Image (tube, rainbow, N blue to C red; front, side, top):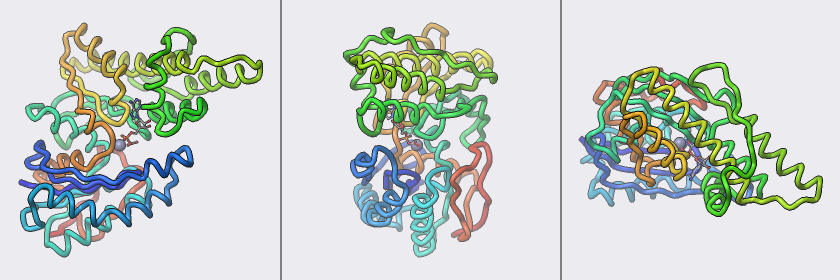
Length: 342
Ligand code: KG4
Ligand code: ZN
């Protein structure tokens, strides 16, 4: 079964064709990230406008690269939440029009469920149950994946997402946007223990917090500026990255012990972080757990993950009607309103 996936929740206009939930046939993308970088972060209206300009051509490219026409497509999956509302609406309305014209089922996909599904693309033999840390620019969730469409969120960030903290510290260090890769690059020549940063305290056993850590890093930057002292940027980048990777992986292992789950996964844009991947690998091995990582191409936002999850949603009977809306927030455990669309 071939699913066309469409993703426009943030600054990537992406379309992809995936067969049977784990075989990527094509992936096309246009990104407004270089334009967003001029502003040091995402400008929602720019994202929406670029999606409108690119979505038709990107979808055509995904179909032709897969050697398909709409006749070969069984259903159209689209990110319906969470994300920038104006950006999501472009994808949802485009998918709706295409599905209506081609008389295909319309399948709404939760963006974070899509990030989880990126693991099926990289590891086609992976099957639930497993435990997954989904760490992106807007979210940081510890998710028990009971089944392809059944999830329990064990813990989450109580304030900033890990990616957001990377972006804000990178901005203060004038390293550019997106901040995660920039911090990782700067950290290569730094010492991770040079700046002692605090480990934030949180009440929930599997919750995390990054706001205090971000503020502590910003204080180091501001104090150096006030005192006229030189700041060692690689050292601060390395110390910050080390602390984030330690917090994220310690909680992942705590959640694994609590659930007795021995298959652990990382997903989301922050899962591209090499130090995080290495720390998770080392701690999982020590605990006797298997760790599965998404291919780098599937860590950040992409449409193949939406098509992959779309396959599982569709086979579970989760389709939408022509009144499908988009939502800036939506709990990943909950399904979307259902309807008939083919
Ligand atoms: O999943 P994603 O592409 O978009 C959202 O759903 O938010 O995640 C984007 C986030 C950004 O905050 C970016 O700085 C972060 O992922 N990121 C990284 C790395 N690459 C991207 N964070 C740390 N290290 C990286 N190598
Ligand atoms: Zn994402």
